[in-house]
Length: 249
Ligand code: MN
Image (cartoon, rainbow, N blue to C red):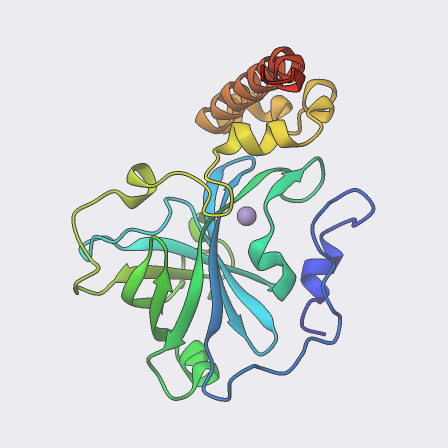
């Protein structure tokens, strides 16, 4: 089944992530394409997950540095397991287990293949496509690297790809991840997403706390996010009664 690996890695009684339909629907369009999204994921390491709808599931690549709209950049993109379609708009907190951390919907829109046969392009390791999102637009390519002899550094053979922006009207020397860091769903940051949910798990059971030494900057960032989320909750606590007051006539 297409989502076996996705389901095997997760305990849906403990994770708010969608289990997905075990028998995904047929593709919406015979030409391919459809939904695309990028989720900014603060887990043991901060990364960005690119999702492309294909044959009823979301093809997925984890991009450590995030997408770049500078055509001179080649961003490592690790091909990971297919995700259910419902995952594409997920934003929230994964309290424990696989991928524990905070997921932000960083960009969304539609994608169109620039090839006739997506499956063939995936096998070949060269998928050209157009994105029409809020932040990412224009022409892109995913190219699989040879992977030979690089299993240690880059994961299992065949999983390492590069995401590259083609030079067009939508490319430029802008650090898009820094320029547009917030959620396209809520316009919030990680702290806002965390504050919107019960942050208790983070004080009692911080998933990355034990890995602080190894994770370095990610653990530090998470600690800051938890601090800010707690501050947002405190502010809300003090402003709520005021908001309840009736306006003077
Ligand atoms: Mn991820």
